[in-house]
Image (cartoon, rainbow, N blue to C red; front, side, top):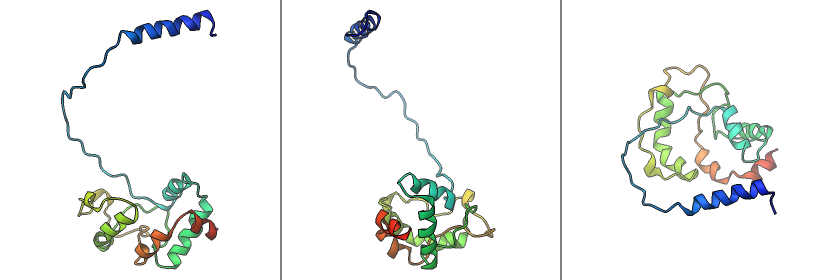
Length: 150
């Protein structure tokens, strides 16, 4: 049994809780808010995200290198977070397929123009982008294939 002081606090809490009653929730106002998407991923941020799923950074780098060599993604540059209009135009028709691969409803893809904050006229080094075989390979990637890679 708890000491006297602690017990008194519980009794007071129970007494206060007994005086409460339920009520209906009322919506007093509604405001439509929009949230811009975050910056595009670079390789280091991608490594952090998949690291939370149990992958080690050396595994991510090794698998990414293999994906690059198989023309699944572009060369892995770490600092580029912008895209050219040509890259965007190339990826836009693939967006519904890419969405399905990562379990996103393609109907949610309403942005069909590149947002200015992501756009660059001439890439400094080149954004990490999907290659032509991405949609064939990505559904087969999982922890087992990554573990086998390294």
